[in-house]
Amino acid sequence: MMKVETLDINTDIQLLLKQFKLPDIHARYDEQIQFAIDNKLSYREFLYKILKVEEEGKTERLRLRNIKNARFNDLKTMDDFDFSYPDNINQGKVQDLATLSFMDKKENIVFVGPPGVGKSHLVQALGLKACEHGKTV
Image 1 (cartoon, rainbow, N blue to C red):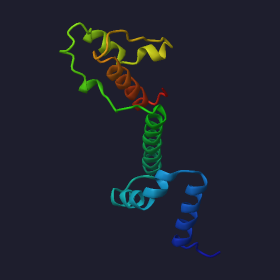
Image 2: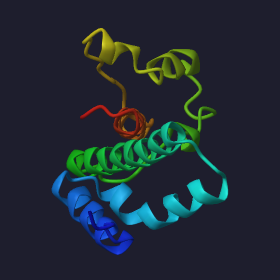
Image 3: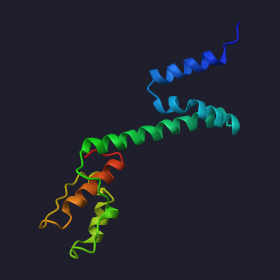
Image 4: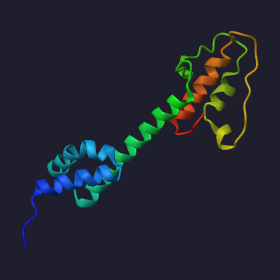
């Protein structure tokens, strides 16, 4: 029985990673192999590490796709909102909305007020936060 060359195995692994659509493991395979060797990872630790690499990549691509599909005018955040003006905005209520619990409960929210008080900013900030948590808007 002939020993299979490491180069052939690596080539086959790369092809399989493409076939199974694992782009993050594919892109970082050599780096992760070297890390495993340098840190003497067990097989289980190595498998866990490369699966986490793929999970993180998929999560990031989902986040970016959700933001792109939402077609926000601007990327507004809650941190950018000036709660000092207007002074009648209930900051506690807005912070509660920022937990996105209304989405889990499948509740709708409506912002009502005169022009220029930040309704669009808050709605876009909540939408962006939802996208960052894997939700579509």
